[in-house]
Length: 293
Image (cartoon, rainbow, N blue to C red; front, side, top):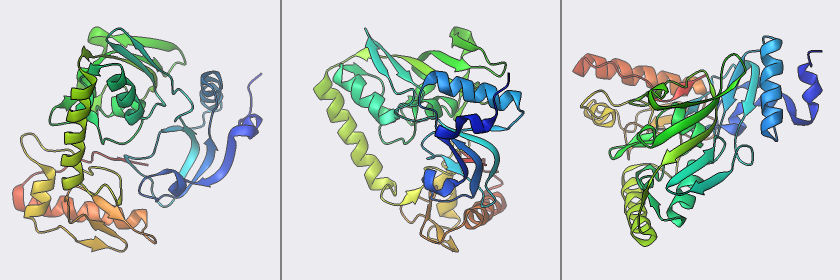
């Protein structure tokens, strides 16, 4: 017999404000907000929603996300530590659950003397979010390290993708419509002290150039090929421009920061003004890096 969504009342909130769960502190309510406690419960919730034809949105830490003021109809399923949070080290491989925070995985890898992830320091969010969006920086992306990804597919089966079944490109992957359950990263043996030194150096660089103390969703736009989105926005003279209680960061023009009283509409209007200005001045169409619900 098909379960109803109300059968999950222990983990269900109705009309839950998503502003509580996003880094921008913005967003209207989710019709159904579910926080599964185990992988089995997660798979059951997803199966029920699919049987009832309830739209599903998977939420991690909410770092790379703008939720509109109207909110979300359907189910928002939160997948974050302690759910799917196991991190195991096997030789030079790190196996991390999709709900693991990226920072936690980096700590465990470095403790085991495994290098290759230190350039991911300072990137917010979960492992699953990092894989779906192929997070990274100038020194490389997480997709270059992934040797296998275990997912829940659209037809409800658990499958492990590896080799040529893995597809990564700049801030994109082939896992857009799948739920990432775990990832295996192939790393290299290294000295823990040296790794910690490199991590500290990377942190200092990020702190000096990014508004890490402010409410933001990370970089708003993808860098166009061979160009810097932040530099293009800055050259349009837009640093510090505000709409309502949202403004373009004075520290890094590819960040929009929000204050109490901001609305998602404020952010969307800023995004639109940035895209228009950059298109007019440089004939470049900036693509969003953040997700918009």
